[in-house]
Length: 96
Ligand code: SF4
Image 1 (cartoon, rainbow, N blue to C red):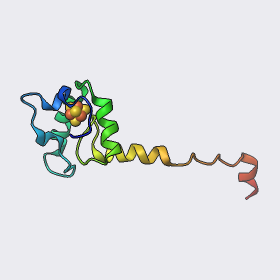
Image 2: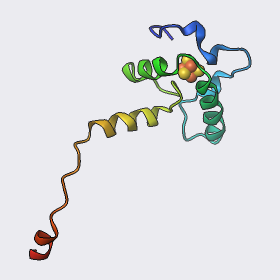
Image 3: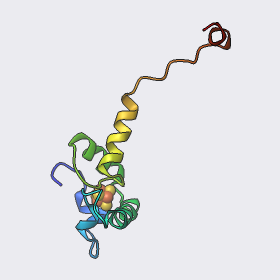
Image 4: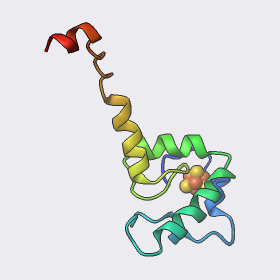
């Protein structure tokens, strides 16, 4: 992962970790199993937050920083949404 600082500490580079777990095919038959395994590895990773920030900044597909791509995109979209408008007061609701 060029540009990701401290890649040498990445938990996913440890022996026994299958790169296929970090799939970008979130709809594949085995995706739930693979994503669960990848997230477990990410939770032990000392650079998880840096990895997630890098993946967001560089629009990476697949699992990085303990999140799938759609989870990372969803989190970005929610932050960009304007806050909801306040509900009309009960007096205004009765008038309509
Ligand atoms: S957070 Fe996950 S994907 Fe990122 S370097 Fe660590 S183990 Fe790999």
